[in-house]
Length: 277
Image 1 (cartoon, rainbow, N blue to C red):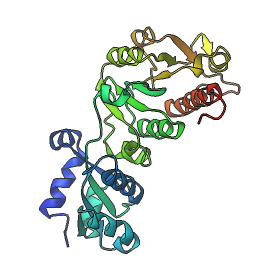
Image 2: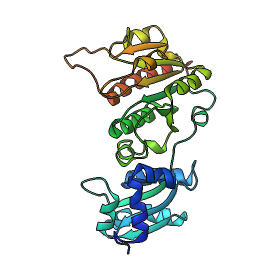
Image 3: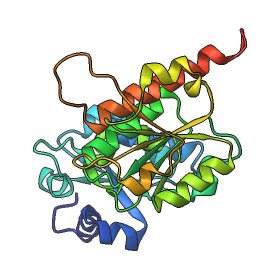
Image 4: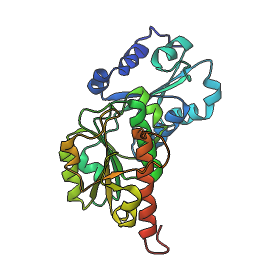
């Protein structure tokens, strides 16, 4: 049984830091849901994604099926004490299960493919919980990819991975590209680019009425405190605001992204010929 002083645990613990993740090409996915989704991808679309799994002896019996499945697929499963798992966790109450995975981000051209219909672009978003939640919303809305542009949060950080609730493993994610480069690639694929901003001249309802949302669309979402800067707003085809019908001052970026992405997904479904899913 491994302890928090064991070499393998010490090496994995380094992955809590961004620089170590980038150097090793690995990150940590904590909790049974994340491990299950990562393992599913490792056995399917992304072979070899999961390198190793650490399981707390005190909780391993709850996850026997998952661990047996992993071991049967050739994934190394390490039993460790509670202190070792706690040292790998960033949560107050560790869940007793951590997978070491290969980094997920892909090049922009690979993520977009040839004909994407819906893409979320995060620009200078710094809160990992917001970034992870947007990835989860994009996945739920059926988006083709998420682009994390500019000086934004690392999508492989623990809080972002947890906030994505497994969705980080479901759709392509791009990180670190300049916003202008992302927009050029999106336009090259025939997409309209809409910026979500509280001061937009067009509101979301009006955009849908005009038919803007029934086209292949990329949404730009900005920094939690300052929104999208003037240079990025200038890249968009239209700046769109979400109408506020009550007394709230604004919506946070993750909530705004959910509203916009679902509006586009609904408009795209309505625009499809009858019988086409």
